[in-house]
Image (cartoon, rainbow, N blue to C red; front, side, top):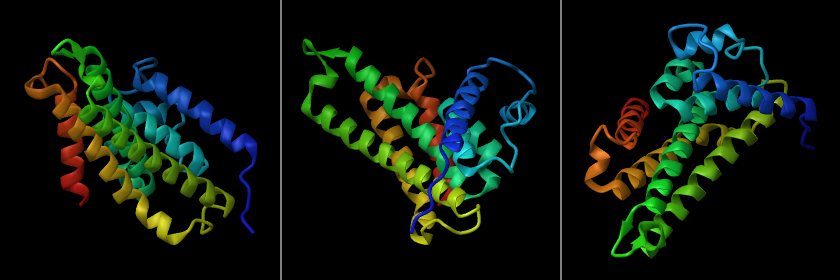
Length: 202
């Protein structure tokens, strides 16, 4: 019989994600690096429930994949996967926003079937990766942090999140066309950071 994680843990995860979001956005500089800032507000505490830690890592990844991995990469594959999920979400959102705004031949790129299909696929894969990371975290919490998670799911979190982040970064870069390679748009940095993570983690 599966153990249920108490609702307060899930509420804590939401609250921690909100605090991490404000830290990542620059609201409360405690240290010169993201890791030091998160540590300064208690969000790198290894005694926090896994459900809380993955939400914090995901928010860190949404701000910067490389900074998120610097803060959480050595904490194991689950938190690295959470960072990659955040990076994938940001890349997908950035690409979709550009596709909605960029008008070609009299209509937005987002109205073209090839772009709609590409971003629907990317959004689904990122959402699935986030759901897997959360499920494993909740199972670890329910099992006391030691066991409780399906070993296959636990082993799959990093490759699934890495594939989703890479697909999102690639789609975002492609929809930007040549602009994606310039510093004028943030997608260039996102793609570079996910590519570096992919090279390091494969």
